[in-house]
Amino acid sequence: MKDTEKHKGLRRKLVEEIRNQGIESEKVLDAIDSIPRHLFMDSSFEHLAYMNNAFPIGNDQTISQPFTVAFQTELLNIEPGDRVLEIGTGSGYQAAVLYKMGATVFTIERHAPLVRKAKILLQKLHIRATIRFGDGYKGWPEEAPFDKIIVTCGASTIPEVLMQQLKIGGIMVIPVGEFIQKMKVVIKKEEDKFEIFDFGDFRFVPMLRNKAK
Ligand code: SAH
Image 1 (cartoon, rainbow, N blue to C red):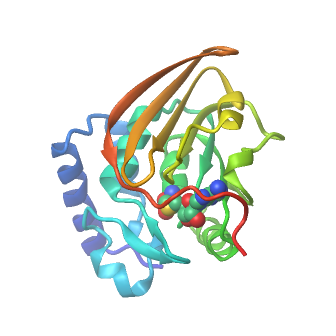
Image 2 (image 1 turned 90 degrees about the horizontal axis):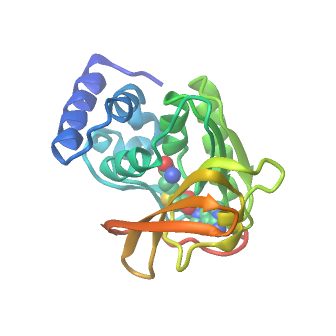
Image 3 (image 1 turned 180 degrees about the vertical axis):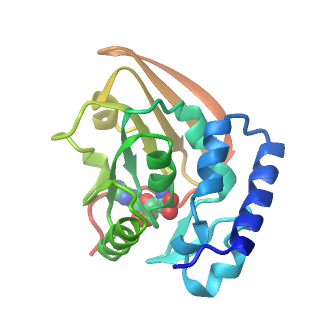
């Protein structure tokens, strides 16, 4: 559980790389700079933690590429105090970035072992996020509505339930598509009025229905 000077140096380089790729928000870059990504990865990948790549985290899932985390987070336009729902906890890294930016984080994961691991790690790092084992297609009705929703797996369509669980004025960032996903920003203008914008192509693991066996 160490965060050495070497890790910090590699992280600063990664932040510069992401900045050069077009991420402008200093708040997002600061959050990436402050979260020890190597602790969210299997120790066999630790030396690769500050490469700008996705990596396996078990259960056939991946921790997203740092640029993608930064890109989605920038699109969310997080304000301190925002109630944010994440679908796809995975390693807990994206949740940690959101917490660092001042969000109150609720996150859902369909693989129980990933939920267990993420809970333990975030607790050790003193990062507060409420993590639930469940199916993100159902959202989190007891905690809705949310200021922001971020989906970190590829959905075939935008789930209606998640649109309902957004506050008016709220923003959802969601990759949509079967093999390659378009990053979509959904803004809830009124109860039944949404504006949707496209932000380029990405590749995510699929958003699957129901909890894993
Ligand atoms: N945000 C993660 C990246 C996770 S990859 C991180 O920072 O590490 C996407 C995750 O979405 C996977 O762990 C996968 O199990 C999960 N997932 C896929 N479909 C889901 C669903 N319907 N509900 C909840 N989680 C889901």
